[in-house]
Each structure stands twice: as structure tokens, then as C-alpha cells.
Length: 426
Ligand SMILES: NC(=O)CC[C@H](N)C(=O)O
Image (cartoon, rainbow, N blue to C red; front, side, top):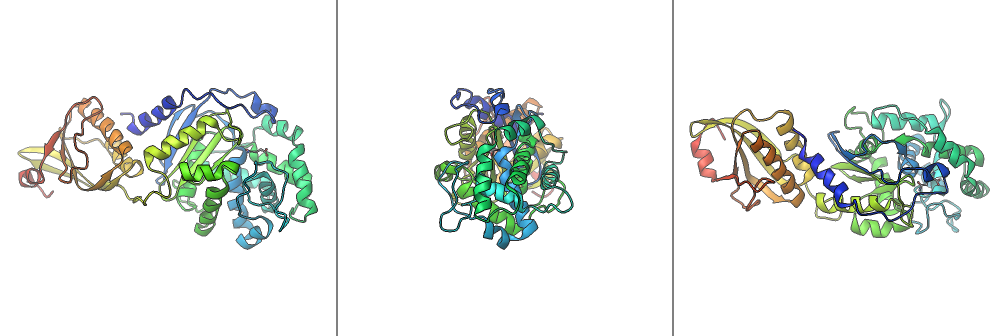
């Protein structure tokens, strides 16, 4: 059966379908030729499972979403102290391509704006392979597939890259740039032209959510402390001059790119990625920001929300005989949020119950977020359609009035009925 999490992601696309505001980035001619109606959304858990909806395999250039990964790599290559000597960590409150450095220090204010990102690129180790190849190798390990430069995008931006060149000359004159301005800008632009999908980006973001370890390969790509530092910078500077608004509303470390992508990271839980090419006046995807806002509200992503456990909500699965008939009992625990019920939903899909009677024991459940309830309703529909009977044991009344997504009621069992009726331990 199709995962209800995919059905949920479909609703994010449907609910934002009316948003047609914003404009394509036109200072890079190749981006102005993009199809403005493309849209995609993906999320990836820290277990490495990716869910994606919309134009999931459509490739677009990573642009400024490359900046966090280059910054983390520069920290690995040179150490945090050296990187901090070259680039600050203060929000600039300015546009991403502003021609300005911190007047007190002569350094770029942070690594998420172009001045800081060009400086970052020039700090990457380039003795064995070029800094661009090094970044492509990193992207490929993060996304688990070969990531390449979109040569048309790179050529288009190189031909119109005067502003970034101007910035690089400014940086060079203040002593902040390790390379010749033209070399640094060419490398930075090629780094930005790497071609990715929302699936790739969700996996990349999930690696940051997972403390720097790629969830599927288990490879440590960034140190834990480097990842924490990066996420803090993304939280305060990732959305440029909209960063304060972003942190108060969506509330997760994020980074946007001018091709229309945005990535977000909920530490310890999930990475998310959205794509829609029309940009708002800050240079962030207009529909993408709305999609992120919905994801944040529905999934309870906001960092300042009282913390929710990242552990799985499935405590254990038991096969027992209740009142003379075989039953599968799923014992759930903790707060039911999307990232904690994801593993339960995946077990139900990949290893469906073999008994007609399926019991969910919610005795140890504390709180159920609306999106978890909705996903559970959709899962119930799929189970009922497959011929199962569903019974809920819910002594704390965490899901009062629960029904499947078509309004079909489930059975309500007391703890005693389950415990007394069961042969085999419950
Ligand atoms: N915000 C962005 O995505 C900007 C990246 C783009 N390559 C530039 O330097 O202008």
C-alpha cells in the first residue's frame, strides 16, 4: 500500500497550488528559462527513508543551498578557528548578494551570503582535487548518487557574474580571500550549479539532522560539533534578510537557493526540501516558504516548541490470541508526531499484520499531534480496506473520537479486555 506520509505530502502541494506570486530569478538567464509551475516536496527521516511528492525527479541547480555544505566542509578541512578568522557568524540583515563587508573586521558577516560563501569556497582544500570536484564528491556521498554540474547554468552565471566578481575583488583587497578573485568566483559558481532533486536535498538535510552522519551509508561526513555550529548559522542567517521572520514562524535552520529550492533541518528528526522556482523579494521561493510553513505547523517542527522525543513510537509488536482469535498488538509510546510514527507506518506497510484483528495499545502515549492523527486515520483506512478489524486501547483518551479517513469507526477496548482476553503476554 502507498504510504500515508506520501498522501500527506500530496496535500502540501494541493494546499499551496494557488500561490503564483513571485518571479523567476532573471539575473542568471538560464534560471529565467525554468518552468515556473514545477513543484516538489520531500522529507527524509534520520533513518534515511525518503518520502517525496510532486516533480520528485526534476533536477535544478542547488545554488545557495550549497553554502552550508561548503561551510561544513571548510570547517573539516581547515578547522573552525581558521574559518572563523575569515568569516563571521552574524546575521547581515542584507540581501544575499550585497556588496558589503563588516566594517569593523573587514570580513564577510556570515557564510550564507555570497561574500561569505565565496570566501568559504576559497578555503576548501584543493591540493588533491579541485575545490569544485571536492564539493561534487561530497554532494554525491550525501545524496548517494553522482551529482554533476549543470554546465548550461554554470556558463550562464559565469557570463553574468560581475556582481560576485566585484565582491571577490572587495574581499581580496581586504585580505579575506585565499585565492585570486576570478578563480574563487568560477569555483563558487560551479559549486552553485550542481544539479539536484528534492530527494537528494532531503537526504542531504537529513545528514545534518543526523549530526553529520549520512543515515543510509553510516559515513560520518561532518563532525558533530561542526554540524551543530553550521545549524546555528543556518538558523540565524540562512534566509538572508528574512531570517528573523523565518526563525519566529517556521522555526528551523534552513537555506534557500535562487533556483527555487529550500532545505530545512529538524535536528535529531528529519530533513525537508521543497522546490518551486518563483521567488519572493528576498530571493526565497514564494510557494516554497508557504510549503515549509505548512510542514512546520503540521509536523511540529518549530525548534522552540517544547522538545519532542525523536524515539520511535512503536515500542513493540506482539502476536497473541485474544478471546480465542489471533491478533497482532502494536504497543505505542511517547508523543505521536510524524517523525515518531513514521517507523510504525513503515512497519505496517513493509511487514503488514497477518491477523485479521489488529490492536493498537495507546496506554503509553502522551500526546498526539494533528498530522500524526491524520496519518493514523489514513493508515487505518488502508488496513480496513485490506480486511482488518482495528481495536484501540486508549485509557488516557489521547485520540477521542478516532475514525478512519472515511469516517469508519474502530473498536474501543479497555486495558482489561486486552489483558484478560489474551493468551500470550501483552
Ligand atoms: N541565493 C542564491 O542562491 C545565490 C546563488 C547564486 N549562485 C549567486 O551567487 O548569485
